[in-house]
Every structure is written in structure tokens, then in C-alpha cells.
Length: 609
Image (cartoon, rainbow, N blue to C red; front, side, top):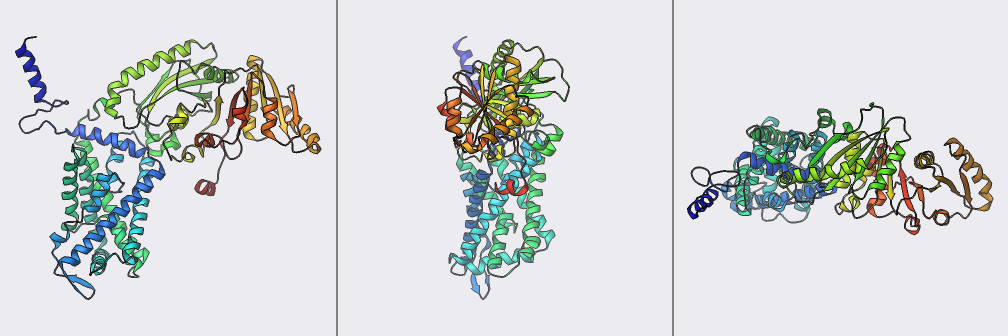
């Protein structure tokens, strides 16, 4: 290639952006297309929709507290530019008084806090694409709104009783708050809708900006429209209502129904319908670009409407499900195996297949879950998708070829997600699994939990039975099953029976009583328990020391496998927190298989633990 040709090529590259937008004329080089803006919003929404309740609430709380600053400076500027006469401020300059009104919103948007009205755009865009369910969207909204209102209420307490509003600012705050109460519900709704349009529009333009200065200018000018246009924002209105409530000027019911709720409904309708939906449909059919292809299976209509109650509530970055086995009936036993590395998880998969092989009709679903670092964008993932899926498929195929179970249908899929541990539970619900067999290695899925994530959100209601293997060179020739009864021990018994019948494992049962005086009762219990579970021909050991862990350590086979059922307080949640108190698991040299079954919980237990 000649020098002139190279220069021409370089010049052409300089004339266009990466997406091909020309650098000259009406369109400038650093301007995003509407499709590109939508892609940025989708990537941001993924972060929001997968945030924990704690993260969302406290980000919303910070947002509510920041709104208090807006109420404070707006009231102070009105008092400063006007004259206080009795219980009102007159003659103030509305333009000057509004100059600092956007400050709280600047803190929120630039600082990354959560605001309900700002939240109408990104999660809704994700929901419209059926990457997130409607229940997931409503969960996001409700937690952020609760945080905003809590922060606003705390701020109102400070304003009303903290001596912060001085020099007539308290009179101005009461005046502007009362003016909202005096407006009609319809007027509040329509003005709230326009304000919702402004706020959600800010989000769209913000993601079209490339630097903080541009975002700052956009946020400032947009939110300046609210006081100048005499519009209403729901979180500001709630803070003002709480201020009047604390001063005894309004009741809760009246303040909510005649002021806050009409504004809230208007903000929601304005943000969702007038901006989010309109902006969605003004993008092209290729609005997702490389972010989406056939490797991402969108939510079904039932999942979209009902969330995890119908399967799953969120779509990971890549989710491909390839059926490779013979067709099976819908009532077949389904066993899912989360695989972190198909090359090294052979023993885990063989254990799962051994259990499934004892069922009349069974399917084993191998799910290769690939952890994607937080902050990796959808666009980057799209460029790497072909390499990830092809490499995963190659490894899964090699793993399947090494298995010799003719009566088991084996399926394989690859999932790429920011939250590999959480994805295990989502995939189990989606797959309608009867049993999940997974490993316990702090360097794999267990180690990907974000700091502070409330594990109980995932583990409080298990989707199915779980077996968790601590593999120390798995050897199933001899199996020890300690039991005190209960459903989790029943699951351990199922595993022991499957190993005995399939690979000829020698099974021993262990029951620990508190004293020698209880030995006879213990023998009777263990004999009856074994007979009911088709384990009557096994060796039965009664330990009268009262120390369960020491008894397990004494009787544990080496090599071999110990089957331990969960306590009523659960097992998986304790493993995830690193708070499992069974020290014997680390003391024995044999492999350990922990079993846990879903436990029904009442409403009070769900709310308070």
C-alpha cells in the first residue's frame, strides 16, 4: 500500500466514529446515536436490577437526604430574595430563588445515588427488552422509593426541629409546601407528569454525554425547569408534606392523598410513557447491536409477567441451553449440575449421574457458569461471546463424552453472568430442577459474592433439593451417614441408597445420643429410621457421648464420603457467609456431601427471619 493510500485510509478513520457517525457536518464525531444511547442505558440498568435490597435502599436513602438540600436552599433563597410578612414571604425573585434548586439532584445523579423518578428509565428499558421481569422492576422501584421517602422524612425532621431553617426560611418552606396541598389533584398529576418527563429525559441525555461537565450542565438546566415551571417532584413533595406534618399543619392521610400520591403517579406516567416508551420505539430494530444475539434467551411471557414465580426474573449476559440427550417426559427427574470448570469437575458430574441413574427417568443438565467481572459492558461481552461459547461448548462436549450413562438424558448450557452464585438459583428455578449437585470451593462461585450481599434473599426459599460437595479426592467405596432424623437426613439417605445400589458402596449409619442411658432408645430410633428408608442392611452405630462432631470425626472413613444433613437453620446460607459451625468438615480427610431441602416458612419468618 502506498503512502498516499495509507494516509487516505487514516483520514477516513479520522472522519468517522467507531459506529460510523461522520465527524463533519450536522453530526459530530463524539455524538452517540439513539441506538448507542440505548445500549449504554441497558448496561447501566443491568447493574441496578441486580443490586441487593440493602444497596438499593441505602442508595435511595442517600437520594432522599440529598433532596432535603434542595428543599433547604430553595426555601432559603426565597426568604433571602423576598420579604417575610407574618406567615408568608412576598416580593421574592422566583428566578434567582430557583438558581440553587437543582443542587440536590446534581448530588444524586453525579454521585450515583438512587432516585425513584430517575429510576423510571434504565430498568424499564431492560424490562421492555424482556431482559428483566415486571416483578423485578416493581421490586426495584418500591425499594428505591422507600429509601427516598425515608431519607426525605429524616431530612424533614432536621428541617422542622433542627434549627436549620432561619431568617424566614422556615416560613418560606411552609409556604411552598402549603401551596402544593392547595392545588387540585388533577393539576398535581399533570404537573407531576411533565416533571417526570423532565427527569427521565435527563437520564436519556445524561447517557448521551461523554464527560462529567456535560452531565453537570444537563442536570442543572433540566432540574431548573421544575421550580421555574411550577412543577412537582414526588420526593420533594413528600419531604415538604413531612415538614408540614411535623409542624402540625396537615394530616398524613390528607398529605398523601391530596399531594404526594397525585404527584407520584404523574412522575411515573411522565417518566415511563412520555420518555422511556417513546425513546424505546424511536430506536431502530438493531438498537442492541452486538449486545444481543441468539445466545441470549429472553424471558418468556410468563416469566416476564410473574418473574421467578414462573421461572426466572432476570436474563444473564449469555444463556444458551442445548438439548443433547434423548427426549424425556416432563415428569422426569431433573438434576442440575453447576460446573465452574468442565475439565476438573468430572467427579462432581459423575456423582450427580450416579444419583440420577437410580431414577426411572432422569435428565442431567450441566450448566457451565462463567463469572464475568463487574463493570464489563454488554458491548464488550458481545465481542467476546463467540469465543466464550465455543470454548465452553468444546469443554462441555469433552465432559459429556467421558460419561457412560446410557439411560440418562444429558443436556448442556453455558451461562455468563456478573453473579455466578446467584445464577445457580435462577437456573434451578428456570430448569424446574428436582435436585442441584454443586461443589463447595471458595475460589469458584462461592467467592464471587459481592461484599454485604444479603444471602438470605437467595437461600431463604430454595427452589429444590441441594447437595454441596467438598471434594477431597471423592471415593464412594465407604459412606458414613450421621442422622438425627428430619427431611435433610432423608435426602442424605436417598444419596446413600443410590451409591449402594449403583456402585456397591458400604453404608454405615451413625446416631448420637446424649448419655448411655439413652442408648437403647437411640438403637430403636436408628433401626426404625433405617428400615423405613431401605437401609436396614447397613451397619448401625450408636454413640452415647453427646458430641456429634467428635463422633463423626471418629467414625469418618478414610478414604470415603460423609453425608451430613443441614440443621433447621440452613446450610447453604451459612456456607455463603462463611459461618458454618461444623468444624468436623475441615477436620476429616474424607469428602463431605452436605444436603439441604427447601423448608416452608410462614409470612412472619419471611419478613423477620
